[in-house]
Amino acid sequence: MSETSVIELSRESVNNNIRFLRKKYGSKVRISSVLKANAYGHGIEQMAPMLEDAGIDHFSVFDFSEAMRVKNSLKTDASVMIMGWISPTHIKKAIFSGFEFYIFNLDRLRLALKYAQLQQLKAKIHIEAETGMNRSGLNQRDLLKVIEIIKSNPKHFEIMGFCSHLSGAESISNYMRIQQQIRKYHKMLTTFTSSGLTPQFRHLANSAASLVYPKTRLDLVRVGILQYGFWPSTETFIHYISRRKDKSDPLLRILKWKSRIMSIKEVKTGEFVGYGISFLAQSNIRTALIPIGYSCGYSRSLSNKGQVLIDGMLCNVIGVVNMNMIIADITLTNNANIGDEVVIIGKQENHEIKVSSFSDSSNMLNYEVLTHLPKNITRVVV
Ligand SMILES: *Cc1c(COP(=O)(O)O)cnc(C)c1O
Image (tube, rainbow, N blue to C red; front, side):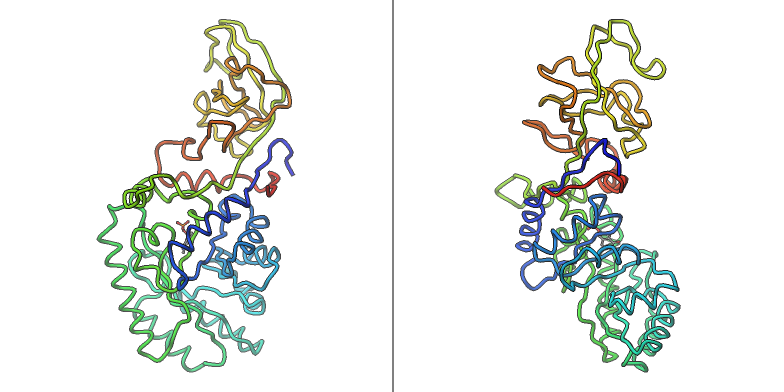
C-alpha cells in the first residue's frame, strides 16, 4: 500500500446519491450498481458493503475477477452480474458461484450449457441483443438459435435478463441512433418473448439513458457514474437541472483524495523550479513539496496547470509533475506547515477541486481520471 496519499469515501454521500436515484426511478425499477474498474476507481471492497447498506441488492461488473471481489466484500447474497469477460476456464466457477452473466454470442451459450450440465446447475443468463452499437450482442439470427438452445435445455438455464447497451445517451448528437436502438431492442425482445421465454429483468439504460430517456428504465437500470456523484456529461446535468425549480446539484461526490506537505522551501526571483526550465520564479515564492506524481494517477499533463488545496487556498502546481512528487506555490497561504493536508480532489474549507477540472476537454474524462486512481492508494470510509 502506498501511504503518501489517502482516498476518503463518504458514506453520507453514498446514501444521498442512492436516495436520489431511488426517488427518481420509483420503486418498480431495480438498481444494479456498476462496480467495474475497481468501482470507478473508488475501491470495490469499500463501495460494495456501503451500497449494500444503502439497500442495493444487485451489482454489475465487467469480468470474473471483479465479480469474485464483489462477492467476497458483500455481507448478503446480493446478485452479481458479469457484463463482459469470463475466461472459458472460469465459466464453470461463475455458474457454481451463482453469478449472472451476459450471453453475447453462441460460443458463450454453448460453454454455459456444457458447464451447467456438468454441475447439474442452472446458468443465470442475460441475453444481450445487438441493437446498433456493434460492440457485443446477438444479432437476430443468432437470437433465434439461442432461443432454440434454451428451449431444448430448460433445466440448465435461468433467464435473468434481456438487455442491450446504448451507444452514447449522454450526448444529444446521438439522438437518432439511440431511438433506433430502442426500437430494435423492443423488436428483438418481442421475438424472444413470443417464443414463450420470459426474462425476469428487461434492461437497457445506463446513467445517462436513465435520465434522458426515462422509458429505457424498464425493470432495471445499470447505474455507474451517477451513484459516485458525477454526471455522465455536462449535457445530462443541464437536461436534468433545466426541468427543476431547485437548480442545485442533487448529487454528492463520494471521493476525496488527499496527501500531506512533505517539505517547504523558499525560492528566490529568477530561479527555476523542478526539472528543466518550465517554471521560472518571477518573484520570491514559497513552495510545498507533495509526495504524489504521475505514478499514482496525477497526470503529467497537469504540469504547470494543476491546482491543489492547501490551508483553504487554491495553489498552483508549478514545474513538471514528477514520478512521485509535485511542487505547489504556497506563497499566498497564511499558515501552511509541513504535514498539513493537501487536497488533490475534493473540498477544503470554501473551495473544491473537481475531477472535471483535471481537464476541460473530454466528457469522458470524469470516467478516465477516476479509473486511473491506483488500487494501492489506501481507501478509508468516513
Ligand atoms: C459501464 C456500463 C454501464 C454504466 O455506465 P454509466 O454511464 O457509468 O452509468 C452500464 N451498462 C454497461 C453495459 C456498461 O458497460
